[in-house]
Image (tube, rainbow, N blue to C red; front, side, top):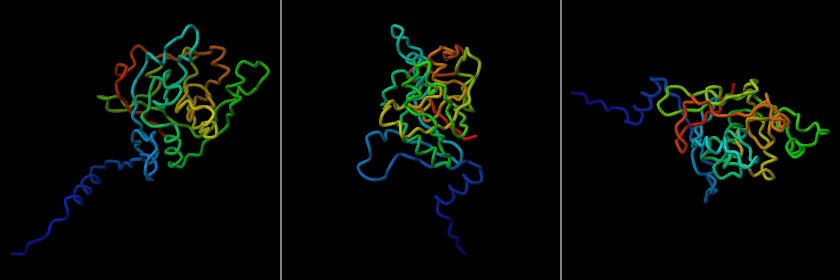
Length: 235
């Protein structure tokens, strides 16, 4: 009787995944050289048109008012070790630089339209810098919540009293990182510190209070400290 050798179990597993149509993901965890930077604290999942990063929720920090100061409703996603993490709705496990690198690997070219003056001159009525709008490829920002079959769009998470909505753009602004040091990944205004920002609102709009984003009461988010996945998808 002829005995046939079966394919290696790993090969069978790979063929089964392909047959089921499961997307392949690459794990990006920063440079391979040893020792790795301390900021390489978590993986980024990379697909053909999107990345996903792990994060924790803190709606209390996002909406916190500090004696009329602070920046409630401004920072959506910030690296957990960044300077603005204490005011963010989502604290990412990876740095803003890692996210910037990963999105660029998808082939996206950042707009890099905003300089530091966009923020630094925000209270100067004669300056045009705070009125500038973030530029770059459009990016859809979604939140993957445990127990839900599909990631949740921003308009199901945030209230926008100004009703202009979201037009999120890959601004990049790598040159501003050494000065900004905020760890900002996604801001809800056209901010020079963000890697992704909202073209519907400028820094001037922030100063004027044109809108103040808040978490919807019916937002399908876990409690503070709960884990989610942040999806940045090129459109």
